[in-house]
Image (tube, rainbow, N blue to C red; front, side):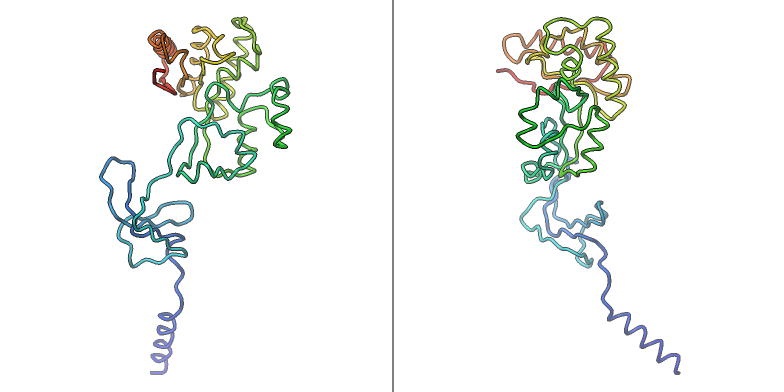
Length: 269
């Protein structure tokens, strides 16, 4: 009898003890647009750590923080497929102009990219760097990613290696084709960047010095990116009177390098 009473008392205490929350965050009553193509639906979203662990009618669950999203939309973070925040994230890592619009991932590297970079290219940015008290202490894409990871960032970041960037690195702003030795150096820079995590090689052919690159040069760089599973992304040479010829070049690069292609801006102006 004595043991039974003790057991009952212990069970009673357990029932009245505060229970740890099941989740860290519970977002309730939101209209979910999940990106799958299905119609929007009303449900709750439970988060633990950095992962969504449950979606549904979760009225009986507990969380450290509950957000009532009634009348609001719950959606996955948006991906900005053409951003230019790679340097600005080092100046202000919060990226509030992106985050407040729901962007959680940004893709950069349109023609120029954050790396590879050499002393001459850094010198060209001297005024900008002084203005924002920014020191470029990286030379490769891997070193940049390590700097960004150490500092922290309000958004995820992916980048292409810019064909313009490697041309500026090796040739500068001269209007001429690369020598065979220079082309090999450019190809090595692309390969190094791909091993460091670049998504592919990109161009912005309407701008100097990118417009000085001939099609054959771009094909060779794209072939390197293709070997590492990358794609070719381009701001093509023309978005106006010669758009047809410009598209022909895009298709030629894709075919000869055997690489998937994305056009940054498919429009006419």
